[in-house]
Length: 179
Ligand code: S3P
Image 1 (tube, rainbow, N blue to C red):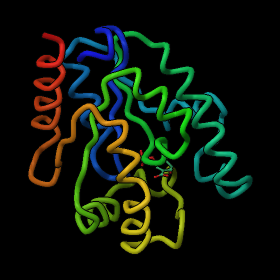
Image 2 (spheres, rainbow, N blue to C red; image 1 turned 30 degrees about the horizontal axis):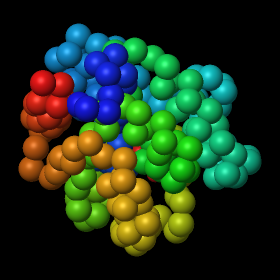
Image 3 (cartoon, rainbow, N blue to C red; image 1 turned 180 degrees about the horizontal axis):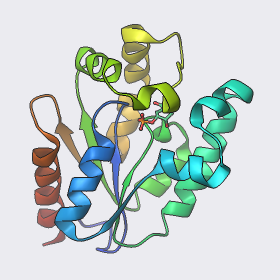
């Protein structure tokens, strides 16, 4: 891990439904580190659900809160941080991410769509962004993939892998980079 010291966070980035929070929990357990979910931290800090922010304010307001929380979390040592899928949209956020080790979790749009429909988190934390459905995923992935790529230290396809395997793969990349 040339650019990041051992104490800096490991960030998990990627679209909604790629398993960031589940993998963060497993990876942190493997490393003996803490873990956190940036969306949950945001909701706890501001005392409001993400859905409510989108309904009562705007996506721009959510993005400002998201940037504030990322900056705050970036000071945590030995912590695996599951980020929200849109965190890479702001250049300042990308600059923060690049200071740490960044694992980009991927899956095809159709798989993401299937997973999101079965995930209860979607109701409170994942309001529609540009019309919903598979169309939204395809459209936003086209915009975001270059941004995820720009930040990523490693990229892991989660389609055929259980969270435990994804965590082990990240761990291997992380340990390789440190030597
Ligand atoms: C968002 C993803 C969500 C959450 C918010 C916005 C996005 O996080 O931050 O609904 O823009 O893709 P997850 O990726 O954890 O679902």
